[in-house]
Structure formats: C-alpha cells, structure tokens
Image (cartoon, rainbow, N blue to C red):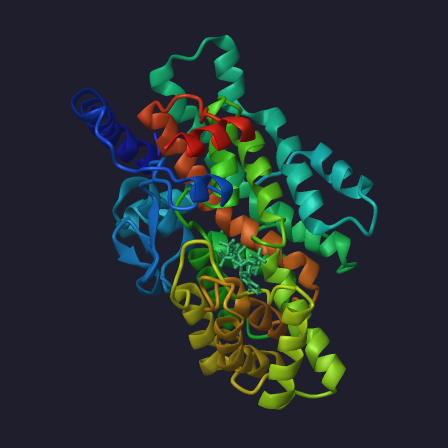
Length: 426
Ligand code: HAX
C-alpha cells in the first residue's frame, strides 16, 4: 500500500465521525441565508459546500490547509497534493513514495495517441484535453469495481486509484497535445527520475535554462492547483462526481468549465490582450496611451481579462507570486513590462467605471508573460497548463468527498412565477 493511501486510511474514520456528528447534532442549525440577489447572481456567497483542501478569503486569497499560497511556492506540486489530501506536508520519505507512485502510472494507452492524431489541426487544445480525459476513463478502476458491487466505504480508495492514474498521465497528455497541435516534433516520453512538475516542463521540449524552467513550472503547478470548491471547474466536477461518475468524467466536465473565458481561458485572453496591445502601438505604450486603450475596451462593453474575481477583493496572491518571479527573472521583457503597467492602470479604470466589485488582478493576469518568455508562445495552450495543475485540487476534492460519503448534489430550483409571488407576499 502506498504511504499516501495508508495515511488516508488512518485519517478517514475520524473524518467520517466528524461528518456524522455534525449532521446528527447540528443538522438543523442555520449557517447561511439566501437572498433573491444571490439566486439571480450566480449563487454568490451562499455557504452550501464543504471543501477542506483549501479556502479563499476575500481579503487574503488562497490558503491551502491553513498555509497561505505564497508560503508554498517553492514546494513540489506532489507535496501540495499530499497536503491538500491529508492536511500535512509530507516527510521526505512520503514525498519520494508519492513521486514513485505517480511515476509508475505515467504510461498512456496506445488508443489515446490515435484519438489525438484524429483531431483537426485547428482544434482548440482545451477541446482536445477534455475529450482525451474522458477517453482515458475506459480504464477507470472505480467504475470496474462499482460494476462488481463496491461497498460505499471503499469508494474513496478507488477514487484515489483513478486520481493517481489520471494525475500521472495529465502532463504526458498535455505535453503531447502541445507538441502535436503546434508542430513541435515527436512526442517526448517522461523521465523516470524527474518530479511531476519538472517532467511536464521537460516533455514540452523547451530549450534554454532548464533549471529555471523546471522551477517556474513547479511554482505554476502549485499556485493554480486549487481554489476551494465553488469555482466553476471544481463545482462542476463535484456535481458530476456526486452522481458517482468516475474521476475521468468529473475532471473532464470541470475542465470544460475551465475552458470558459470568464474562468481559466482568461489565462490565454490576458496574453492575447497584451500581444495585441504591443502590436497596435508597435512598442510598450506610454501610461496615457494604455489608459486610453483600456478605457476604449471598457466603453465597448468588453472585459479586461485578468482583472476582477467572484470572491476576492484584493490583489490575488497568485498574481503576486508570478510578478515576484517576473521581477527577479525577466524585468525588462516587454510582455512583463506590460503586465506591470496594466497593474498600475487597470484597477483605477475599473473603480472609475464602477461596475466590477473587484478591480484587482487575478491569477491569470501575469502567468502568460512568464510562459511566453520561456518559449510557450502559443497562448491557446495556456489553459491546458492550468488544467494539469487544477487536476490536483479537483481530484483531491473528489477523493475527500467520497471519503465523507457525500450524497448526490441536488439543490432546489424555483420558477420565476414562484419567486415573484414569494417576494410580493411580504
Ligand atoms: N473588466 C470589465 N468589466 C468587469 C470586469 C473586468 N475585468 N470584471 C467585472 N466586470 C463587470 C462584470 O462584467 C459585470 O458587468 P455587468 O453588470 O454589465 O454584467 C460587473 O462588472 C459586475 O461583475 P462582478 O460582480 O464584479 O464580477 P462577477 O463575480 O460577476 O464575475 C469575473 C467575476 C472574474 C467573471 C469578472 O470579474 C470578469 O469577467 N473578469 C475578467 C475575466 C477574468 O479575468 N476571468 C478570470 C477570473 C479568475 C479565474 O477564475 N481564473 O480561472
């Protein structure tokens, strides 16, 4: 048994007890009320999900199991996976064991390469990724065992098995999508002696300062890995998983949500906006030029990608992590200079416009400039990199949800007529 599985097996009985006690002793306690505005406004702020892997404070951002994300940026992504699942960082031995476990599951079945080949050359990389994740589900151990009559107590074990299989294969598939889709040459196989994040960086086939590139990729994988469970991708995966669909179906559904421009696709939209601006001005524009250009965009009713957030009301610490990296390593790169200039200009413009509740940069505002510098210039690919990282959080949430024995998700909807009648009663 892997050390991670053994650790979870020792912790899960207590988690189950806590769930049972909460329901039994406090089941009718009110913890949140719902207003009409919240129903009309995308369910903002309604406390209706349990997620232990991480929490997001509106005035401090992402905290993973009690540790602010900026204190985790030099950790290995697999160590953060362990942290999300168990609540503790792993020892050196536990970390090595998890790495070994992941490395032993990286092989991708042959039929997946045929599916990859069959996609049209102009397919969006997220479209390809979502489809391939579903296709991998043919090997779901959870589904196979469920069909044989799996006991509920063991759901989490096979969800863990599927999750480790899928997490191991994500970078292999994602790198293959990059190389095939953008004519980069043959697919590169993983190296057995590299950690998960560095292996992904290696398989993309980038040349240059590999040590720095590996470090950047590990940091990227850590900062994008989770953002509690109400965001579109995690919530979608949770809902699909609650029907006992396997991890492959659940993650693929979540990634389809991540592919939306208001969510993870903002990652590509940000660099697109930066490149278009540089092209329009033929140089880094002055502050006044950039202010006028961004305002024109707002006046046309378009969003400024990388700014605003449904929960946060401060600069996203994940943006800060990328900017700190950029300041150290690529301070004079035009794309990075643009990121810093936008940070100086956009919040005031959004405040002046008075619509966005959060005028500050989010996770997506800076990473594109870093990836571009290291040679990943095809911005349509950026959300795939985000997805590889987000698989860590989404899978962790699914494993813990099964461990807690959560039931199928089924909120109540109401008709417009019911709502109008209800508000006019009082
Ligand atoms: N530029 C222009 N207008 C913006 C804006 C931005 N960056 N952010 C919010 N607004 C507008 C909204 O479009 C909305 O306008 P309408 O009333 O005309 O519809 C108004 O301000 C109120 O929106 P809000 O309540 O502040 O924001 P929401 O919670 O509804 O949405 C979003 C949050 C992140 C979707 C939003 O801020 C946005 O569209 N930002 C740009 C896209 C982006 O960067 N997305 C990535 C978010 C992080 C993430 O999930 N990454 O994966």
